[in-house]
Image (cartoon, rainbow, N blue to C red):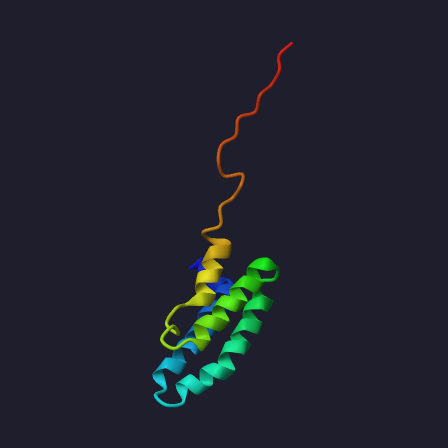
Length: 101
């Protein structure tokens, strides 16, 4: 599969998996989120520069710090938003008018 060869996609899956692992650790998991949330936000900003990356960093921070939301695959959703679901401005047919003499 071509998608699994994309390094950014594989990184996204790995970071989401790490974020979800903290749910499985009964008493220590919530405290690990206190360390993981800022790190995940920094990594999101590094992976996606610009305004989209800043917004995604805030969202991933909130998702990781709030209890019960660790199951949301924020990194993977951001990848799909950026590379798969993004609308291309030139994808719709355009009409070009030409003057005749």
